[in-house]
Image 1 (cartoon, rainbow, N blue to C red):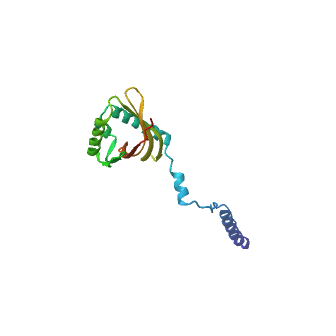
Image 2: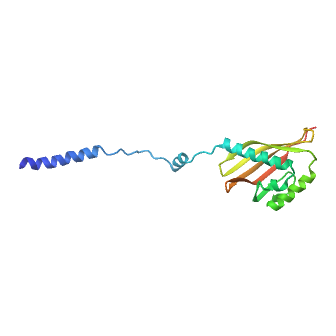
Image 3: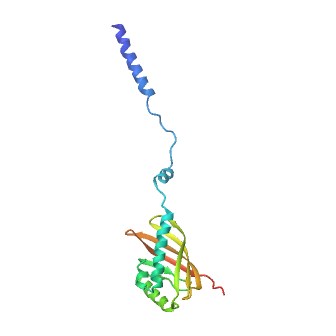
Length: 173
């Protein structure tokens, strides 16, 4: 009987030692919240977004060249603001349409506009675009160039312009 009294505690001690030695190791390094968040967030495909914004600018140019104010206004959000060259800020779709129609009346007959996206940055919901514009007369001669920035927000799955600013380049002779 004496041997069985020793055997039971010895077996229990070996079992506890075995369990203790096989416990999972603890990682002593901890990651900051920023590192964890950075790994969880996927970066947007800015090349694809740039292509999408260029498609919008190409359609914009088509509406501009067709002198279709309603089609141009459709690119803007209801609360959009436009900051044109040497003009007061224009806010809201009704004011934008009136301003566009006024500018069409001043535009040379047969002239065409083109817009080229140079850069985009942001994310898939809010994109800032930097671009350049070229206006040609009816014969195809460049009559003016400029640069612009536009802020696009994705609303109901569609990018709408919420802010834009435009400046003409100095005319060279």
